[in-house]
Image (tube, rainbow, N blue to C red; front, side, top):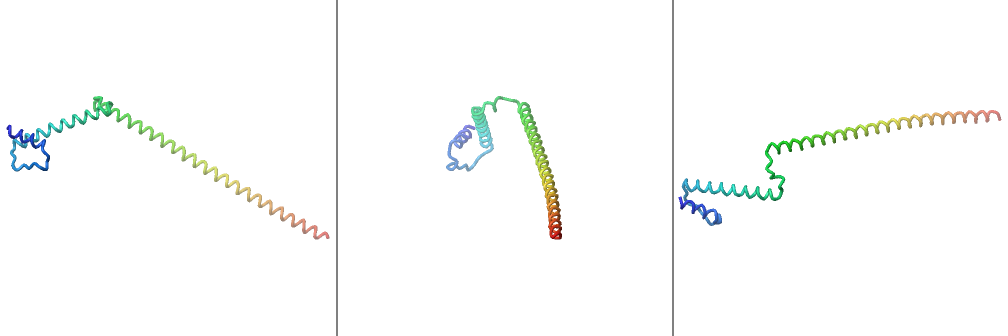
Length: 139
């Protein structure tokens, strides 16, 4: 057992390229796995400690339910903002359609006025020709 612990300690400190394990038994593998699990647990604890040092709010010890409630509240706020954005987009689209309709209506009115003015111009021209012919006939 002591030999397995010594082997595990030597393997954990020695560079991986220089050490070759030729034979191993179940006990050594078990001790190595236990030692690796301890190292992993220490690494996780150190990682958590560093994260808490960086962001204390993230490590406030909040229960998963509290985090879930916070996430749900954030999702609800996001949904409200998305709905507000969709409402604004719809209002903008309606306004653009109204402006387009107004522009088309104005263009139609201008076309009608142009036709009316052209018709009056033709009538005045015909009247002038008639007066010109009448004056020429009097002479």
